[in-house]
Length: 341
Image 1: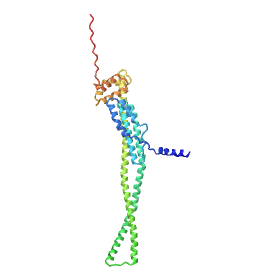
Image 2 (image 1 turned 180 degrees about the vertical axis):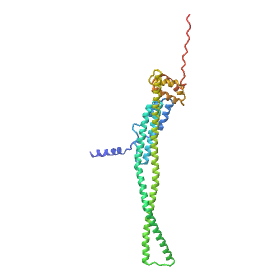
Image 3 (image 1 turned 60 degrees about the vertical axis):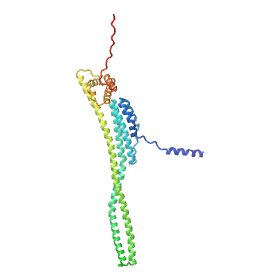
């Protein structure tokens, strides 16, 4: 049985070492799919555009990897891609007249943005703490050792000055050292050499700490930019959510106020249809819009409020066919029948 067990081991090892599939780059996926979705909107297929945009959003958000600065950046980039997908899904829902659906999407987008911001804060805190400690340790070392370095260098300089003077006197024949004096100078020279090495080591360590302080400033700026970016994601999501919620509330109030006034006039109010018909009777409500796509989005909203409204359907058909929105259909010419004799 031993050969069978050994034969199975390589396969087990290979499975264990097989690399995990690389995560889909959401920004690249968004950029790749955007032209097709824009084309659907351009050709008045807002519902299809909404469905396609919604299908891009992954069922599970990408895992935020806060291991180091590089993985944090990659995770932020993935977050940008995810939020772009939510934003696109929301805008296509608006184009399809599905404002309530757009609100749901924007709420999910905001929750995702807040999660990204929280992950950035959590991941960067220990990195910042490491650099803060490095700066504090460096400042403490410099404060404690710069005086020591200065003292050592002063002692080395004093000995060097004395030694150079003795050599000069000896060279000029003005002085001759005894063995005791020579041994003393050599011993002091050895100490001076050690002091010089220690001063050089302190200088190198101070340089290292100074470099770390400069790097800490760069890292702090980098981390702050990440926080600014994450906060910007949240702010943009909050603004878009507030806008769609405000539009829904404003429109609901407009309809309620209009219907109340009509009821006072003894006009029969039929749900939203009374308001939708009144809106369409004022052609400027539609013709003031900039593009046919804007007009289609406006009409899609009316048809969400009042599904099957015949006037809205007719006008929308005219818009998508490139006709004047309120063009009247020409009646077929009736053929004259010969008179009976």
